Image 1: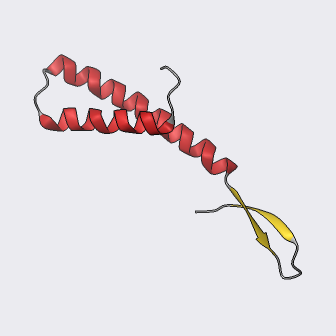
Image 2: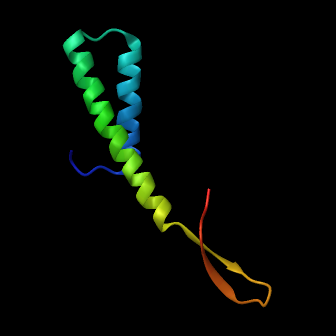
Length: 73
């Protein structure tokens, strides 16, 4: 898969879902779009996982010092 931005991959994934939900595709085309959607989904999941690992925030502790903390959802 070409290197996509997360946003573009998500947009393509949404378009794939819309195509599949329309019911207007032939069987072979549906399978192709489904396979591409799975690849896009895995790519998006990987990108989100990497982003989650990088997200950190600075907070002041009680003594006024900045402390680097991992962001938890």
